[in-house]
Image (cartoon, rainbow over all chains, first blue to last red; front, side):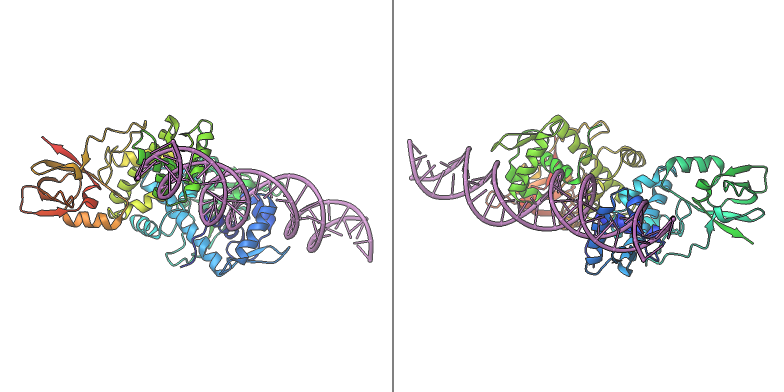
Length: 225
Length: 225
DNA sequence: ACAAAGATTTAGATAAGTCTAAAATATAAT
DNA sequence: ATTATATTTTAGACTTATCTAAATCTTTGT
């Protein structure tokens, strides 16, 4: 059994996981930006985590950091907690899909293995979260994402919304209002190369939407045929 | 809205509430004992809490501390969280009555007002916890206990178990095995003044038990007729 | 009333996590 | 290749919560 990590350490590992998607190196600046702390604090912290026994990060001066196997495991554990909790808060307690993130951010650090397993059981061991994110398995295997950003699609391509960014309540309410929720299918019917706007048609109905890059970059889709 | 308190501060306030039952003064030594920290740490902490704005404690050198109105409110908020969570963990997630305490100790500090209200609603706004404890109301009124320690009863008195101490899993399993759970009625059929043992008969059946002072002091009862 | 015992408080240290400002290194541009 | 810019790291300081050891009160016993 490895030593209990502090909430802060868990937040760093989670941030690094998300920035690196589990592989490759991330700069201290990126982490500082993502976590809203000073670069100096990040350097301090990553040096400590790389000096842990066992090390959670691989750190080289001016070269950024990468998660070690142990660091990745710890990150996936928290991500599993987060996604199970979001689903639980929605399904069992009736939280709306834009409210769950903040609550899960606090709960994810304190629930026991027991709690995690019981919640997973109550939910029927789900493989996707409330916003479509893959949920790491009990053994911390992360399912293959198998999707790309909506941003990358072009005219005439069809896709299905797979996953949306969960951390901005306003953005989530906007998505829900437009019907842009996981599972929904659409076709790209126009692209403007100057502003990267995408015009899409939802379902095979009449609904048309024009989406800017700051929206299309936050939505993951599966390309159809 | 008063400033967010740290988990530790909340633990101190909770400890002081329990030791003082909400009224009167408690010594730093008692708190140190209860929280398993050094007396010096307690002195430090209570001085800080008394210096807060608004003050959470009334502190006088060598005279111990008492909760202020604000301190008492903060304590009751956490106690409400704790008791709602214990019930929730049992009813909704199937935790056993000796497992819930530890989990609730961690969760109680991080749940939002929203979470608290939704849990209370799912449980039907209960007034008593899993171990029979009164649950402070939404407005933080603590219901009158209206009971006394089993320890104080004598031969021929009848009573109903109202509340048992929740923090020792082994003790809770022992109680459950003996049928000593809240709601159960009994009659005292013997008292030994030398060891303070109490002989009781459960229900009006044949079951007889002999209980030592370390058990009878942990059980609260309501005296009948 | 006064000394001994017991409890409480102060003083000084430690550890985690943060900051700002200054120094060092890396990247890019001419 | 050398300077300018941007990023990263170091150094020193602060905060919260803790400890041990020493000093100071209170209480108790005679």
